[in-house]
Amino acid sequence: MKINFTKEQFKTLMGAVQIANWVVNSQREEALEDYAALTNFVFSHAKDFGLEEYVDDSEGELGTFYSTPAFSKAIPAFRWLADYEEVSFWDELAARLARREFEASHTKQEIEAMSDCEEIDVLAVLEDKYFDEFDEHGIDRFYFDSN
Image (cartoon, rainbow, N blue to C red; front, side, top):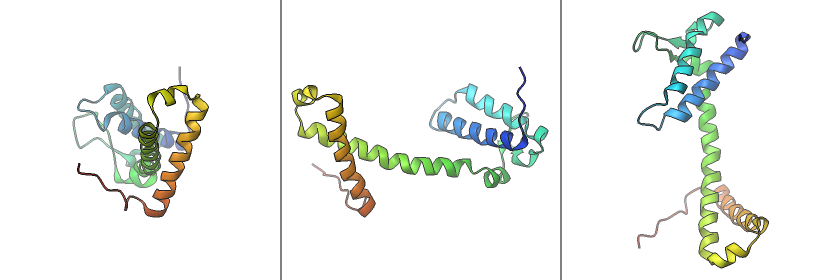
């Protein structure tokens, strides 16, 4: 099978595999080689699309490709990832705080007696409360109890 890409599509693909590889491997002690290898494979074809300024294979071992500053400027994959992480942080924080408050204010029996819709409705109200707090104060009023 052969897949044909335009130059713009290939440039987008380079950003997509860079993001995927980063998400999958950045926090691992040992990389999942399938993702690293796919990123390297895609980057190795950059020259075929006139995008050789976006990759460099001189840093490491022969045949290993890395993104360049020109790549980062043209395809700001890590900026997009940072934007996603910013939104995800607040969503996840609100969800976890709401869940903690929900479980602290209801018995196990009360929670089990609720329908899924009722639980979601209660959690949504709690999450909204935290989103309002974040919108107004960020994390300025977060303190940890040392007890």
